[in-house]
Length: 499
Image 1: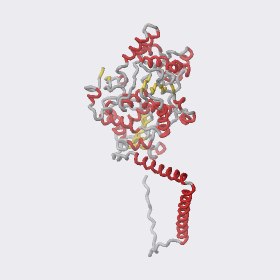
Image 2: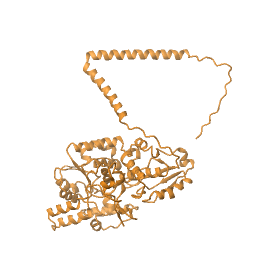
Image 3: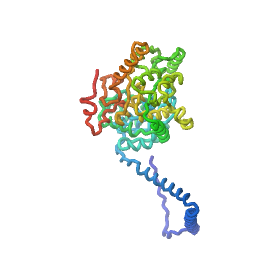
Image 4: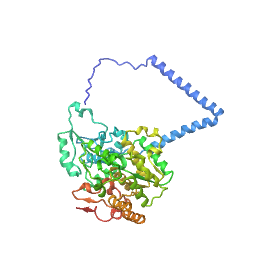
């Protein structure tokens, strides 16, 4: 918006010399005298205090100097602000993320990459508030907005909100659309970029898995990693509590983060009811029918379980952990929400591992109060603990399991046990039917997971079936080599391909 200034002509033959009014001069004199008196009193007070209470005054001055020193250290520790990338923006990109915290996290990284590819200005993403969890959190409630903007400023321009002149009330109607899933850069360059010739604002109303896992230029793959591992930093409130949880666990020794995805929404939508009562199975089915957007209604639980498509039950998880060699002294942190069936279903796990805890057991109710009814913020705490754990074990390969796995690979291939649920179901059933002795069960479980410990490997590519291939954020191999030869670290050749 342009502001025009109108010149006002004042006719005067002679400009008088500037004269300071007498009242202003008096005011300045009073201020100077008052400052001198106050500083004199302060010096006298410190001197007298030093004679009467030298230790007290020393403590005060030490604390003051420490605070100043801390402030200086904070300023020194701040990374230098990168120079902003200069480019002519082709338009504004608004995005509405859908799903839980970790699905949205991956989507945000993808949208940063798309904005960079198309030379767009990205508006801070909007988070999902209408999903099953109904979390009202905004981006700034979970992530550090200023850090996000500043750490990517050399790649893409990010703004907190659209300029007013591009809002609907000014007649600007954004083009709203979902981009095609698993698309490569050619789709965005050939199909999406031309749309900005007619529309200055595009609104992507779905963002889950809208960028391909493979076949993306290396610089864009690395930008996805940078957005994920460096730019998306949790708020100070979340980080403070998350680090406290990690510290409390580490003080007692090594610990396992068990992502026990045995929650009501997972069981209802997957149709997995193994171990549930008839009443619970019916309750889960009713819940599935309550949500019209969930297409699959009639599900045969045992068929899905036999295919390895169900999360392990708490009882099954206890047996598998024991078979893997974890003893009763192992600290187990349950990284999950409310377990379906509560304490009744956790009884076997706690009997086998008495040091099983959740965040609600470690923190005071007041500390978690600010996060109540904010599932994504609670999930952020579990995310931090899971990444920091000595061993991470997900009982289902959902979004959190995959994103944490990739984060732990990035941090040096920290131990992540990826359970082969299809094989485990066979072994568990044989053991519980007494056709497989405990020693044989233990041997078979360990053999099945020798090469599923988060070791370096190449991402599996399934041509034309992106849902069946390895997820980029679970194994971002392009970002893991560093100075090491990728063939030496991951094995020779390209990513393994299957058809």
